[in-house]
Image (tube, rainbow, N blue to C red):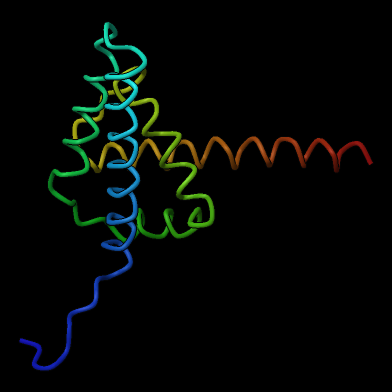
Length: 126
């Protein structure tokens, strides 16, 4: 028990909190789109429901390897999370937050591979 001190979250908990807040913002956006722009298209409402469930569901304890991978992409974590969240309900339907985080890391890996491909081509052309 801590007396006089607050327990501080570990890095994994911080990443989960950030990701959940972005998911919640995207859920609100999807719900707004569903109500105002496309009221007859059920996909946006369904996507919002999935996103709300992810944002409000249980927070997984992330393995050290996952935390390290998130730390590597921390400068683009917001954008990657928004990109992943926008696909929910349309291209993907993650079961839980751990699966959603895997989507973020897959996007980060794809982006890193594309950067490597582009720059390796530049260096080969020297």
